[in-house]
Length: 636
Image (cartoon, rainbow, N blue to C red; front, top):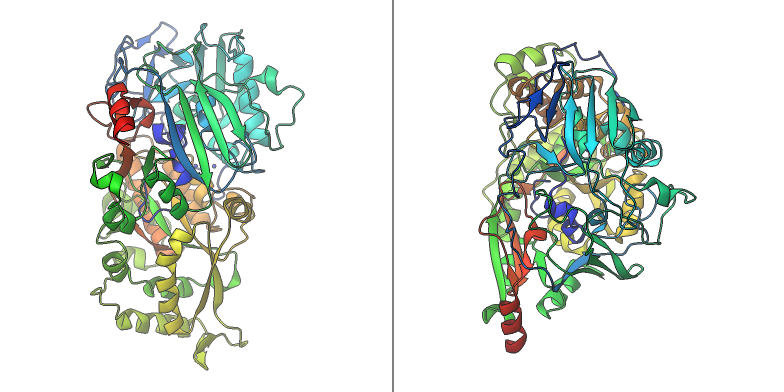
């Protein structure tokens, strides 16, 4: 299940670009045999949930993995300060440019922070795994057979123009996003049959079957859009007219492509809702756009940006020796989290002929010397990623056993035999930069794939060289990739690095117009429908999907459906581990690295809650401390 963290909701990720370490943040039915019918897993009853004579459970919360922790009358999330003062301005940084206020379509580059404009039916708790609480909805209804879910809307919920949010808005949003939105929506909601308005305040999602255990929650994640505002406007086109919203903020001012400011809505309908109390504390949130990460860091040092997250180990280790930091005006914190870190890696586009042979992909993986990079570029900050579901119980390890082995046995002969006989382990070097053993193994694989060295270049039987381009959207990552290209050059492989602006990069990725890039496949503690968009055949052919690699394997399609239809946690873990093993055996990426902390730097004018939640960084629960702000202004 894909969750919208508080960090994503306020758009902090917009300025990060590609990460040295992932933050450890998905899409039509897969081909192959259908998933077997299963008895629908009962939802753990929430505190205060009731089940009527009609067998319908009525509740204020939903959870996939356990009993929701908070009762119906909970006053606020436990990781916020409900009495946080309101006011003040905060400036954040973003990279590149933007030309649209419509983040739901492929066309255009969306502005940072737009998720603040619209509210979802349910809002996830960052302290619990896969748990949501009623937000736009006031109550959820689920029948015993789990063939539908209904949401009763809050009568007080309003758009910023004062009109009520109705079931017709929900139906219009769902139908519009599935028809005209990014491919993600068609896959994520692929098992929804239809959506119906039952009066103005109740909406019903009807399902095609009851095997998709997370479907009730993922439809609750949907941000609802105003039907009446969009009538007469073309939803399929980029938009630079501030759209109508229902959230804590509205667009206050903007200069297209350069800056955008959001102002807190004084009449926000949800200000006293327990899911919103203690958040949205800044009066104005402004995003300033910069050409690249280096320029943006200089702006932070000059006080033009108030808060930033660092994705660069060298910067974090040595570049905070400027005057404001040494005097204590700028603070740095490493905030631990328990998020699965997923997979970041140098991703192959296997639609390209040169990458269709798994031996070529494995050879190029062997050429990457992580230990040298970690010691010389990253100050030893990172851990090598060995799984697509790293840092969670969902990651495979050792040899398959038990239920995991029984699942894989179904596919014996259709997957590499090494899945059964060899534990997946990435090569380890001594960090000296002498990677000769791995390069020797890589050359053997390339020769087996039909390549030979001529004039110090690897060529195939037709004399075509093994040559490709690595596409980036941030100059900051060049220092990471260039040593890798030098290692490849020792094999006779020509790898060129090309850095383009954010808008061009997004267009090329949507059209799969690249050879290799740095890609992040974020995961949650409860993988499900988003896996279709990452790995399945249908999405390999659909422009704008997240199957950037181009994976099309009927076995993987079937495993994805098994993950989605897992009836309980034990089955989910076994099925996800099986999927992980098959993905790893395909050598679709050169795995990178991860870190288990948020590295944040900020000018010392903020207050923040006493503790951070386990699964996110809710910057929208911070606030401007008036006394700190006055002292900082005086000292500066």
